[in-house]
Amino acid sequence: MRYGTSRPVPGLDVSLALAALVVAVAALVRGATGFGFAIIAAPLLAFVWPPLLATSIVLLLDMVATAMLIGSGALKHLRRSDAVTICSSALVGVVIGVLVVKNLPEGSARLWLDITVLVSAVAALLKLRARALSHWTVGALVGLLLGAMIGAFAIGGTLLMAWLIATDREPKEMRALLTLVFGLTDTFAVALRVALGIFPLEALTTAGVLAPVMILGILLGSLAFHRISAEVWRRSVAVLLILIAGLSLLHTLLTV
Image (cartoon, rainbow, N blue to C red):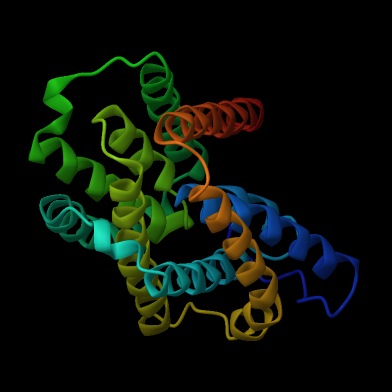
C-alpha cells in the first residue's frame, strides 16, 4: 500500500459527503454484527484520501464504535479464555503489522486473507465444524494474523469472525470478544503510528466531523442485533463474510 500525501483533505464537499455515506453503512454493519466497519470503510475511504490518512480515520472511528459498545454492556458476555489468547497474540501482531507487514504488497496479504475468510464462511454457512479449530493454538494464530492486518492495513476482523463462527460461539460472546479486540488493537495501532511519527493530524479533525454519522449507525445496528435470533444472525454474518471476502478477492485478483 502507498502511503502518499498527494491528495488534500477535502472540506465540506461532495467527497466528505460520500465519506459520510460510507461511514454510515459501515457503522450500521459494525453495530449489527460486531465487525465489518474497517473492511468496508478502509478501501472506500482510500479513494477519497491518501491510504495512511484513510486508515488512520478508520482506526479512530472504530475506537468510537468500541467505546459505544462497551458502554452498552457488550463485554458482559466475554469469554475470558478467548480474550486472553486472542488479545495477547493480536497485540504482538499489531507490532509486526506496523513495522513489517506495512512494507509488503497489500495485494498478497489481502489475497490470502480473502481466501481464508471465504473458505471459513462457506464452511460456517454449511454448518461444517472442525474440533481442532477450537484449540488455543489456532486462536493464537488467528489473533496474530488479525493484529498484523490491523496494524498494517486497518482490516482483519473478518478472519476473527470467521473463526468464531466456525467454532460455534454464541453471538453475544462473539460480539463481546470483537469489541475488546478491536478496542485494544485499534488503540495500540494508533499509538504506534504516533510514536513512529506517521500519524496524520488531519485524521483527528476529519474523524471528528464523521463521528456523529458513526454514532447513529452504531445505534441503529445495535437495535437490529438485539431483535434477531441467534441462528438468523449466524447465517446472516456468514453470508456477509462470503460477500465481503468474495468481492475483495475479485478486486484483488483483477488488480494484482
